[in-house]
Image (cartoon, rainbow, N blue to C red; front, top):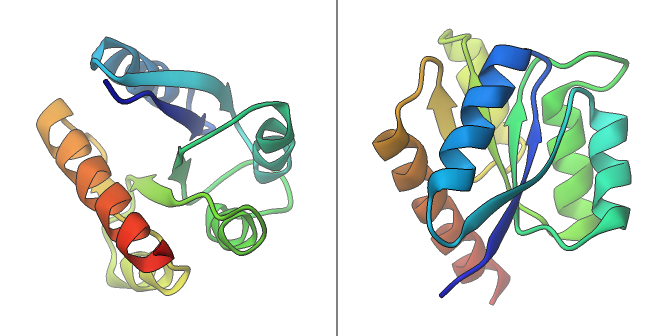
Length: 129
């Protein structure tokens, strides 16, 4: 059985809680932590093995989700999937420019979230090999 450890980077507590519950209820997945900014996300990488980051695009602090995802991918080789409530084309294009491995719109549902996660992880493994 796989053990995918997920970091949730989300500044909205309700969304973060929903994501955590969905992740923790899925066999083979666990939420390692929830943080609300890019700096804390990077600090979490040093605390333990992570396989995936669910990242809100708009975050608290000086670092956007896009910037954090790019830095994490370039330096730690951990893929991010964006979760956002902003459906505009500029946001979507900007998210894809950061080499994200997926994009899920809020409100999200379990099936769509895990289909995006599975596809994103597969794409990451194919690019990494």
